[in-house]
Picture 1: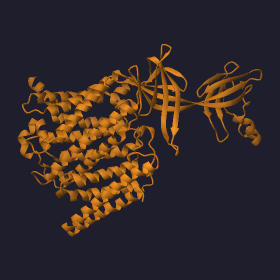
Picture 2: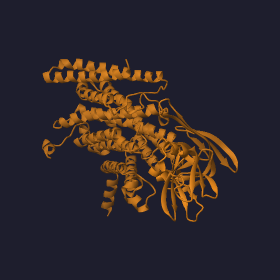
Picture 3: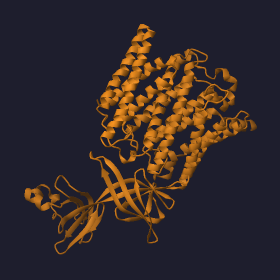
Length: 370
Length: 266
């Protein structure tokens, strides 16, 4: 038993394990880039399958083993007489980065989609659930600025943070220029155009007008009838603004394209409704639809994040970098060149000092083998 | 003369340097080593001038930025960094041999950049995501890393071809130093990239394909360093790992563009 325990310890602190784990983790990462990564699937599939590989048990197990390997190697080296403080620091830096990254799981990472002029208080998280911040965010203005050649120059959201009925703060958020509020950071992440249409529906007796967006459902006067807004266009087939409706009811389902300029279209081709019955705004009895106008607003996508592990990971990265630069770029006194440094790390290779820089390639016969 | 014309000429100067060294090799004349080297230096000077001129041109267009913002510019910089490493980072006795690998490779990369219809060599303004002071430091350190790894692979190939020889080999040390310099630069590149990602997207690491492949490359070169430590020298296995590392570099640079991600502009 004791021998086995020692054997395990030796294995855990071996460079063989280090090299093996580095290659295994690389292979897991490679698989991760071949499959589309998505969160929010089933728990088991996420744990075992390739679609959420960076949260899979394979990745985590390899990560745990790597940490164990790091800790064992460091503790073994601590006992050595000729130890390199820098090498210890360097590997401690990696441990800090991993610990900081793991701590990030306790943070928050989501998006707020705020229509221009409106206020939102919930954050949609990456797994599809939502969270409250304890205050709400209003997008007072959103703008996109373009270069002469049509490429985007800047996306800007002017935000106001509202708490207890008052404005707790204001900030302008651009790409590469986030804002901080209440322990959260706010980033310009995306934007989209939101088209809305003013539709009027008459059933021969009364006429109602509603402002609708894509996906909205308009109840119609007869019981069970309703119109779903499928799509809104600024300009459909050069015929101007249009709304595509799906009329659902007792008569079944009918698609309808409602053009704002239907009178002109009808005048320029009188047989339009014969050729395209779906363009006739009165084709579903008893209703007559009309598009009174199209209006567009922006919806800004503001990334909201809080990462309690970030300072730790940042410190780890800084420690790693500084030690790496010191280890490799500053020549050590008493030794001629950088490769000597490596021997301080592996006491096991010390007896082989003479061959440390040699090219030891196995016999040619082995290379010739297929 | 525009920077594009200059870069086009540089392609042929590097090809010329390569041809001279090949002729010298075939005729067995060492006397052609010098002319080949000078041709490469001439190409490099012109290459540098081309990059600086492009920088200036962007300012005269009113959209001034460091020329590291699209695929064309990154190819031009990658080949520049690799030639720089070879000309000024390698001792004289190995330099010409490495140059006879690097000059044709640089010419190929520049030729691809200049003449491929798929690559837009125009100067474009910066999209919002790239408007950051982190752009230059991130791209420069990553590409110096790539360049060092590429030169390391040349030494690796030399070592494999001379596999039979036992004992201390100066190429093994050069190989190891190139891997290490590359590792340091690439580490700085990844760290500056994650600081930038933190600033721009609030997430220092997001498992975007380019990020993931950079990490794969970093892990493979970490494996190279640890395998060398384990076996006590630059063994065949160490060299093979580093060549796999170069494949990973190439995929990080080119292959990832075929996967969707945040780095699709470079």
